[in-house]
Structure formats: structure tokens, C-alpha cells
Image (tube, rainbow, N blue to C red):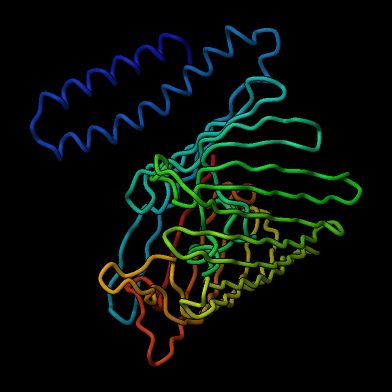
Length: 372
């Protein structure tokens, strides 16, 4: 890519905007705006590459930006309602790199997060010392093991209850990260955030949300993670504690994680969630790098996401108590997390009083994930 390519992207963007303004069809303009977001992403990539050529010609490899992408397409079928659907779950692009040996950055956008365009990451990092760095911007809050996995690193087609309903938080704030000596590696992360998510960045806050995470690697293949979080998305503060452990040995990956959440003044019952799974890999010689056999058990008690009913001003149940057993097979092409074919069956168990969501019922899932 060169400066002429960047100029072509800019010219295309201006034409699209002009055409959108001349049209009165708002729906057409919305489609055009989505296209413009896509164009701007690659325009930025081209601009950074041009800057690299001009400003870092003496050492181009050190400052060369990296462009990655993840595409996940899947089909789901629910026997109970005899209905199925195709879905593009993710179409992510990320741009990361350094503009200085001590200054890094990352931008990530999802062009199809269940059909919606979302900016996920937008942050810059300053490497104060070899062990200490400071990050500010929009990012995933340091909390839990499973919620921190990117889509190409997931073992199952659908995330655990901890990763989806309880521990999955992205916000705008700052993180201080510290790493110890490699002989006994420990990573500590502490951060403060707005607490209002990604779209309410102009709101002033009298209180912040906080998160801390410690990872201890006692031996090769073993990771113990302890994390705590205090968030207040609306008017009720919630305090969460999570502890998880995984161990990789031979061809096994064994993992367990427990989460506990308490609401201030006990305005809602305490929430507990648990996730555990076993993954066993078998190496293959032709066509596929390996085949993985997986089984997962996870459960969660009644949960509220921190928002009150606007009519009653009470915290109602947003996710009912449920258990789930997931079995699966994953075929990995070339290398792990490069291209996976994931085949899963999810079996849910609810109490009689539970009300299942439309997508939280027994189902077959076939997914193809590609990472580049």
C-alpha cells in the first residue's frame, strides 16, 4: 500500500458522504455510513503504512503495523422449536503496532457483531519500564479467564455463561500492568473505568468502576487467575470476585472457573457462576493439524445486569438459573486458531420457574472460524 492508495480511499469516502447527503432515503444513508466505516478502517491502515515509510525508514520492521482479522460464520438449529438460522457472528479487524519503541497502539472494530458494527478496542500503551506499562483508551476490562479470550481463541462455538452474561465487560479507562521475572512469572493489572460502557463516554461520573487481575504461572502450562471488580453501570454498585485455574499437560487442557457477584444493600440476590471444561487434542497428519474432543459444564444462578426496570425501579431477573452441558468436536486446519471447524451440541437445564431466552435452549451449532 502507498500514499496514492490512501488518497484513493479518502476520495471514495468523500464521494460516498456527498451522495448520502443528496439522498433523502435515510436507510440508504445508513448503509452508506456502514461502508464508510469499513473504508476508513483501511484508510487508516494505509496512512500508518505511509507514515512508516517516511518517518521510520531507518528501521521499518520495528514499526510495521500488524493487521489481523477474524471471521466466524455459523449455523444453529434448535430441535425444540424446529427452527434454524445462519449467522455471521464476528467479522473483526484489528490494527496494532508501535510508533516508538516505548509507545504502542491497537484499534479493533467488528463489522458484524451479530449484525451490528462496533468499535471494540482503541487504546495506546506506554512502556514505562521493561516490567511496567500504562494503557489508556477503550478496551476489555481485566477480569476472568474465559471472558478475556478473543473469538479465535475460544474452545467452543458459544461462550460460557461467565464470559457472556457476567464477566464480559468492555469500557473506557486506564490500566497499569506489571510483570515479574520470567523465572516465576506473575502479571498484575489494575484499572479504573467510566462504568457506563462504550457509548456513554461524554457522561461525567462521580464514581468510577474498578478492576484488578493477577495471573500466577507456577509451572509451565499452569495458570491461576484471581480477579476482582467493582462496577456501577446505573445506580447500583456490584462487587465481583473470580478465581480460575487451567492446566495444560500432554494433549489435555483442563480448566475451571468460579465467579461470585454481590449487589450493594442486597437489592438483588447474590449471583454465582461456574465454568469447567476438558479439551483433548489428537494430532493428524493429513488435511487437518488436529482434532479436539471437548466437554463443558457450566451453570449460573438468577442474574441481573445492573439495570433497573424503568417502570418499577426494581432489579428484575435478566438471566434465569440454568445449567448446561456442551459436547463438541473441533477440526483445526494448519495450526491452532488459524481456521477451525467447530461442531457443538448444547443441552440446557432450567428450573420449573425459569424462563429460557429464545437463544438459550438446546441446539446444534456448526461454526467455521478463520483467523488471519
